[in-house]
Image (tube, rainbow, N blue to C red; front, side, top):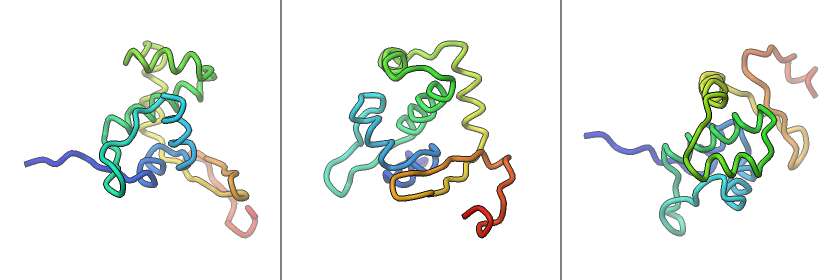
Amino acid sequence: MSTKAQYGIGELAELGGVSRRTVRYYIQEELLPPPLGVGRGRHYGQEHLEQLLRVKAMQEQGSPLSEIRRLVSGGRMTAAIRPALEAVRRTPWTRIELAPGIELNVASCIRLPPPGRLA
């Protein structure tokens, strides 16, 4: 018996390499569907994660949000977007908070200086 993946907003954000604030913004902008459940039982599924990765890949390619919204609303993904999505899925990211509300996302294949030097 298999169970469906259920993520809290923090888990979804971490898996997608974005902040919680970005997840909320994408939902507000209708780039992601709203969470499932109500109240404290709100959660996100695998389809939320896949959509988040799609949106992130398109944004990294320089697509404006209006174009991304148009593409994801129909559930379509162009051939040009597919390779970028695969690359994002395979690349783990390190998230570094620079200041409250400001963070830096770095592909884990990039070697960072030690934390003391980074500060």
